[in-house]
Length: 275
Image 1 (cartoon, rainbow, N blue to C red):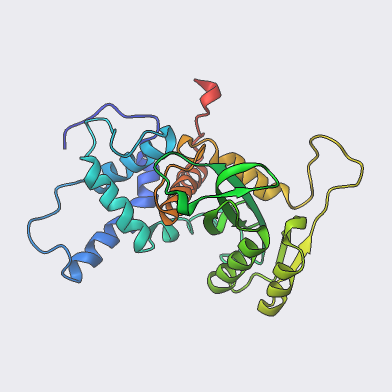
Image 2: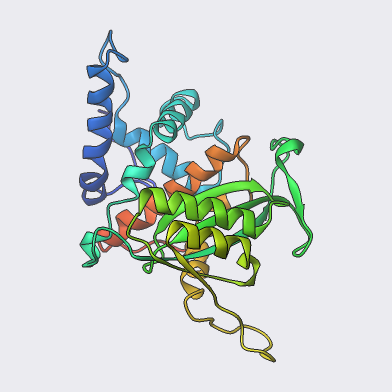
């Protein structure tokens, strides 16, 4: 393979050692099912992942990758296949045991972020968050005590936090059955609390102290707020550019994979303020 000048978003050798086996196993499994019969795949999986990370980190359109990457149709095709077949979900599960935690989380934090959309997002998939006065989409996140992603759901911004909380709790109960506690803000009262009780998850609303103005770190809730801050280092997430909401969810997963792999290899995450 021709050597190339690396981009800051490229995987290091150490990070590829973490991610590579999962992607290689995915390709081998597809060939085992007869889905890749014919000539051997010509595209290197590491460079495909580098291209996806480049889009996520820099915010460039899918159709505008640098010429030393594979054609954009190929890169997006792999991205779509990995999203559809759950590869990003598997990669997101790398970090807990390395952090000295139990493999299964027992608690989570819920929150939502309304975000503006680009012109290519269909109007039917958008809405207005009246409280924040934002027209676009909403990202509903459930994270563990480390701030790592447990569940994500992207909807129109008009979808209530309660509806989002119900969906997240159902996801978390299905994929992380040891979770018995959840913290959330006042938007998750009543319906989300009742739904959590039916799933065996105690949902506790953590409120701001009355009379406090300006910024104030709120117990428990700061964990998910920090995760939103981490995600904003990826310019593709500064606005929702994806036509389909499930692709938006995949972009969030990719950003978390970038963060998790750097965390495991003790590599710093370059900040745009550092450039």
